[in-house]
Length: 87
Length: 414
Image (cartoon, rainbow over all chains, first blue to last red; front, side):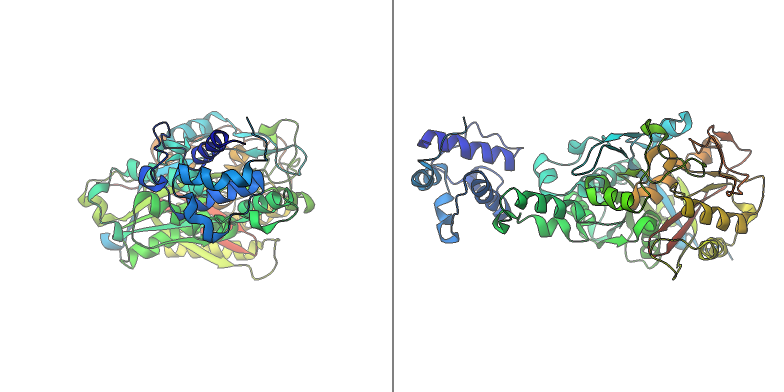
């Protein structure tokens, strides 16, 4: 997957765990939590979905990398670059 | 001596979802019209079966995210609790939320989520790292009641009452007691069931030889009928707002009825086989507490689940207490909706409450060939029965491990 494909995957996961949110105007440079209702359990859902979909294990010390869309994509790209895009 | 209004507990609001109705009006209309809510149903691992399935609007009172995070029992509870409060016309915004208690009867809780998670890890070679972090908050026994408090911002006490299939009555009884103890001013109470979403309940009844089968799902649940062959599992919820009569009068509330008597006891005999003797004692306990005799009761809402021993034992208990009194009407709501487990007692009572106004006992459907071992002449078979008066309704609800509950409601006269 390239970075744009990873971004779409994250958007799909966010849509699933926060179905009441409008994600169309998400600012990729700003923390998710500043733009939507997202608590620690929701955050763990993101980690869980990545684990289930792509068998990616994200260690707890790396969680700060998942604060914004930009930082999440940057962090995940090396881990997912050899994975085929679902689209 | 009559109780003071401060100790008299009345029903002021009703919220429910049943397999054949998502409001009291819709449910009552279908009970009077003989319309079943039992449909074909498929669940994991089991051959096709039948069940009572609800189709209430989950998002009427809950955000989609909240519904996703919680449980089906939580969805049922949140829907019914909100509907009850709306129906009560309480000034909810100005009701002190620390004086509201939530007491919900459940037959079981957590099986649905545990089965789901076990299924999920089988898809990942039993890797427990994919076991959901939501599992514990979803499976704690207080979950459905707790979800109601979060949704409605209630800061008073909440708990579930685990009482097998006596749970619906038990939820009401807990509410009555807490109001009388002045622990709360409003009790949101009753029972809920998510049981159709656990395959285990179907499989266990099947192994016990107690799971109903029929080519026509609407005819599968046949209490007291010679051709009955077991239980139809159902989901649902029945929740009321209870208040002290003094408070209800002060705000000019609509009063559906007064809970004038209740009884709970234990068979202390067997895990599954009920005791007619203890059930009869429970009936007498409730009558005594209400200062009534068997002659006073107009409608008995029976518990019968369409298992042979269950039906026969309850019929014996009822015959012991009520004999052949012709003025009595005995009906059975499970014949329409199946066995709504934790919600059964609540839904069966609520379906009968409108009889105080319309003077009709709804029927026991699917009673074509009465079991000769059932000596109840008062059964309202297949068609509703008009009654000259309805002043008292008695609601039976019994469960596994020999838990018995009886509730008596009196028509309220201002």
